[in-house]
Amino acid sequence: MSNEPFHLTDANFGEAVKRNLLVLVDFWAPWCGPCRALAPTIEELAKEYAGKVLVAKLNVDENPDTAEQFQIFSIPTVVVIKNGSEVERIVGLCTKQRYIDALEKHL
Image 1 (tube, rainbow, N blue to C red):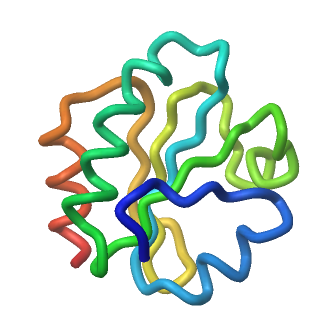
Image 2 (image 1 turned 45 degrees about the horizontal axis):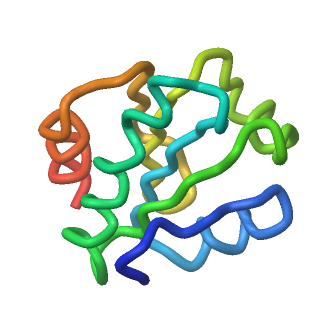
Image 3 (image 1 turned 90 degrees about the horizontal axis):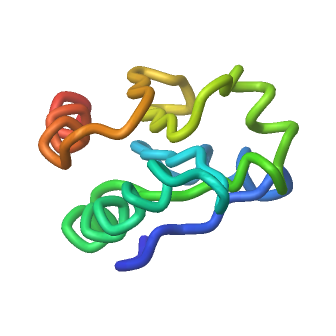
């Protein structure tokens, strides 16, 4: 696990989720203002949870299969995946504490 958000793709998503007990995925797109506003928080979470949680980003425009699989209709959407299954979903831009609370609940 890295200090930087991991860049997920349709090709590496399944393997990344299998190899990590807890994954936080930021579904985003570069044209999305709230997504860009969330980016620094995701970067901070990647640093703070390095070694405990895989914090990752998935560009929905470049990876439509995974976005469709998770039925992402609005971005940003942050999904917490534990043991390969979605355990929490946060839609829209929220405070950093909201994301921390979601992670802590599942650690």
